[in-house]
Structures are given as structure tokens and as C-alpha cells.
Length: 225
Image 1 (cartoon, helix red, strand yellow):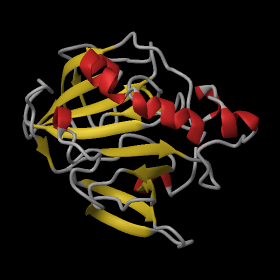
Image 2: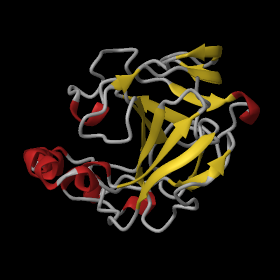
Image 3: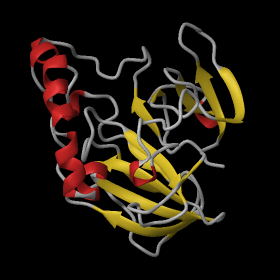
């Protein structure tokens, strides 16, 4: 069972509570993965919308999630890290999203760094391998072999790899070799969950956040940061 790997409010996308495989594929052990996109107190992923939002790409720095600290969701050992992939421009425009989608197969052929971007793999106490993916270049604060506690700062949220806007992708597998890894179900504990259309959060002792919900750890009191 994992803690949410952040403070503040984050929107839920590609949740396995909606469907499995959550991302439409079992590639790289991702069938039970979940995405979290940082939002502000109004549950917006970015405060700015302009002509670039409609017809062009946008700098990742304008998005709430970019640069937010990411924390260890479990106690364990750092198995692997990868850094150096660029944080590329973000895409909300349907015009830019279409072109990006057409390049998906090419990124898969390039290998794990092109898909996962900068990432950290942890082996938890239960022997599961937990991955945090799409990290900001140069932000990783741990090294292979480090022992971490729940809540240890690992890195910052970025837009590296196969990512259309800054977010963190979380998954658990039975192996650190993602080319052969099998996905493990995720369960999170101690969080607030705002379901779409509801002003009041549910208090979840454990569970999988719903698609389209906004979540925050208990200790945050639900406050955006």
C-alpha cells in the first residue's frame, strides 16, 4: 500500500479504477499505472490560457505541476534512476496532440528513456518495484542504493518522456526490468478525494482514486500548494 507521492492537490487521469489496462496497453508493466496532474485551488492544471493553448505548444513552466516536489510513496531502496532527458513543450491544443500521437510508435522503438523520460525505481518492503516517471531533468535527489522512508524527497515533477503536459506517472511491477515486468495493482492510503461535481471530499483510508477526481494527502488538509 502506497502513500500519495506529493503534497497539495492533483487531478487523476488514466486511473485503473476506470479500466485495466489503464493506459490502454500492458507495455512496460503499465497496465495498472495511474497519472497525477498537479492543480491549483480551482483545480486548474494551468492558470494561463492563450493562443498557444489553442494552436501551439506551451512552455512546461506555466503548468502547476512542473517543479512540484515528488516524494517516496513507500519505504525501500533506490534500484535505478535515469536523468538527462529534456522537459519538452506541453500540448493542450488538439492540433499539436494529433501530431504527437502519430509519433508514439517511434518513441516506443527508441526504448524506455523515450517513453518514461527521467525516472526513479524503488524496491519497497513488499518486494514490489515502484516507478515514478516523467521527472524534471536535473531534479533527482537520490542515488542507486539509497534507503528511503515514506515521504523522502525524490525529485520534481517534469515533462520528460512520453508526456503531453507535466504530470507524474506511478506504477508498480514485479521486476525492475520494465521490458519484461508484469504490473501489480496499486492501492493508496490516507487521502482526500474530490469526485467530479462534488464540493466536499471523500475521506479514503485506502483505495484507488477515481478517474477525473482530485486528491490530496490527509496531512495536507486538502489545501493546494
